[in-house]
Length: 115
Length: 110
Image 1 (cartoon, each protein chain N blue to C red):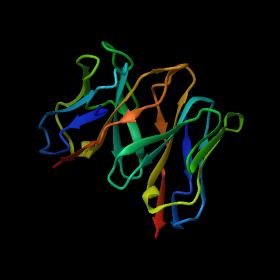
Image 2 (image 1 turned 90 degrees about the horizontal axis):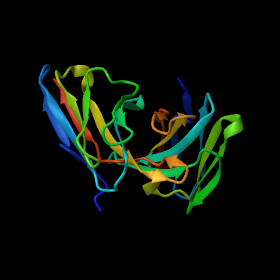
Image 3 (image 1 turned 90 degrees about the vertical axis):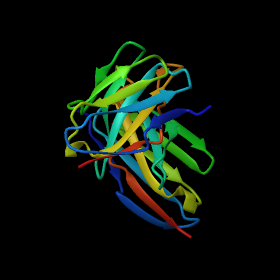
Image 4 (image 1 turned 60 degrees about the vertical axis):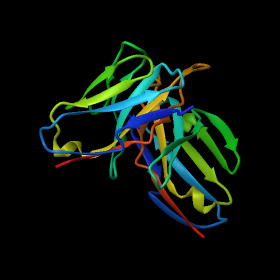
């Protein structure tokens, strides 16, 4: 049981390049999330998917797109990378528990540097 | 949006000491979680605790929802407790949109 996996672990881009961050979970969770973590800012929600086939904006969605490919996979795409998108990106998932979906489980993160 | 404030921002302890971390939030919440981010960056869920008290080994947490704060207690600290502790909350109606505090950086020295 791998939990939440993310690829790649590290990426360097030039301004204007595009890339897709991949996330997969094997816990049969309904909900998946993308966060970014910047120094001194904590984690901020970019997009989430409450269930397969749905996606919604979080706190900082500008410059990103997401795809919930199936129940297991949730990808984050940067169409035209900017230096302000240099950050550590975390994927998370949560599943049905008594009273609703609660505990979120995080992947190891992807470190992205945009030059 | 909801505001989450954690204190202290930094804490240095000697191994074996006890500590209390605090999380204040500005609105009623239906989801409150504590996370530990280790020095390698991995985020581990410690507690889901929108109200009441829970214990897990040397760690325990208490949330007083009516007074809008939560406390994380670490007893007999070990060097492996080092890292950043985050509190995260979401408002009633949605468990999905967690808002994180800026964290408390804990350093436990041998």
